[in-house]
Image (cartoon, rainbow, N blue to C red):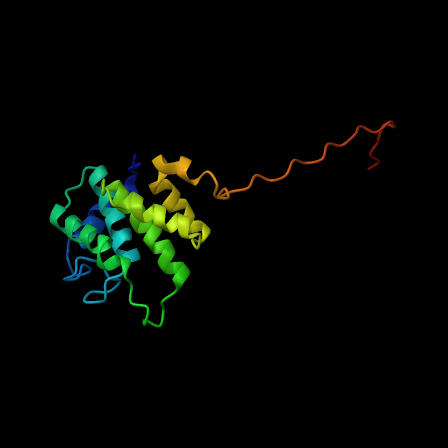
Amino acid sequence: VVVPVTVGVVKVVPAGAEQADDSRQQTAYGGFSLWPDGEPNAFYTAYGLWGLYLAKQAGYPVDTSRIDEALAYLANDGLNPDKNQPVYSEMGNLSAQAFAAYVRALYKDKGAAAVATNLLTEGKLPIYGKVYAARTAGDLAPLFADLPPLHQPPPPRPTRQPSAFPVRMVL
């Protein structure tokens, strides 16, 4: 992954890496929450890990123990969201699980492909989730040959026959 560095990114990446490394957003369970001292969430954890991955790729120092804790959260507790929360959504959860599997794969987590495979074979993923699950299970693509494609190309346009009469435009 190549991260283009521009003037704005130079200022934002260190601040973002510093904030993610601050531990206020990371809970005792290893997952990240939206607010300090909040409940961990698979999407926020995956998003935080993805940002740390990009920061590390760009050469910024990142605390690997925080990464390990967050990956452990995604592999365990992150797979079992609290469905009693008023904002719980099955489609949102499935997409978060697919994104989390993709981020786990970026960190070479061997369990990520199995999660992505299960999500794809269940057939309930919205398009956003299908994209990340397919990217995670990329090497397993032949196993999914019978699944419908993620994107249907548009039908070919009908060709127009040239007119036998010349057409003139009058202005």
